[in-house]
Length: 243
Image 1 (cartoon, rainbow, N blue to C red):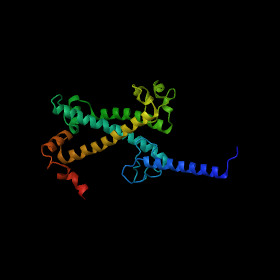
Image 2 (image 1 turned 180 degrees about the vertical axis):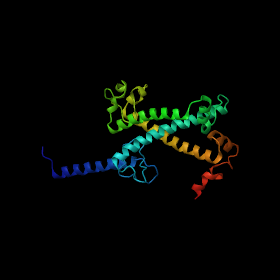
Image 3 (image 1 turned 45 degrees about the vertical axis):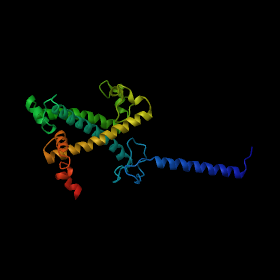
Image 4 (image 1 turned 30 degrees about the horizontal axis):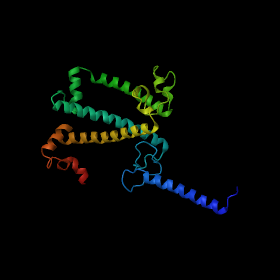
């Protein structure tokens, strides 16, 4: 059956309108770190936790962007561990369930009580961290290589087919990343949100200690005791913000 030129043109217009509608909806659904701020072209929204934030265009190089993604993961996970290690013992000590020093004195106190040599501890940490980071780097350079036979002391089968930066396998005993791609991406984004919050929190802990000489729990107690006068604006931390 032959179609008239008017019918073909009409369908073409409707098809073009439909494609424009899809593009408009996609643009409207694009999340931004600040209202009205357009995301750079190299951030398409495909990455987990991508809100279009890259004011210096550091991720414009695709290879550099891949490394920044992995760096953020590691820094976020380290910060989450650090923040938990600061807050939980601090809260339990204040509640009377523990009796441990503040985080900034904890290392010296532990070394003094255990008699462990600092140089020996450093060398052990250097070896262990170097081994793990080396394996991570090799998997970054060649994704999936650490799942190949003979690459990981007999445990490589547990890492086969997993995503770089997200080990899965034996490190996902509940199988949370095997439910669906949508569920996995949601979990990845939640981890990034918490990791970013933890990095900001740890930077705050450092600044607070530098200014007040106290830990975050003591700082919170002081603020609650005098919320109108014990704030960031009443100490040296606020000076860069005011300038």
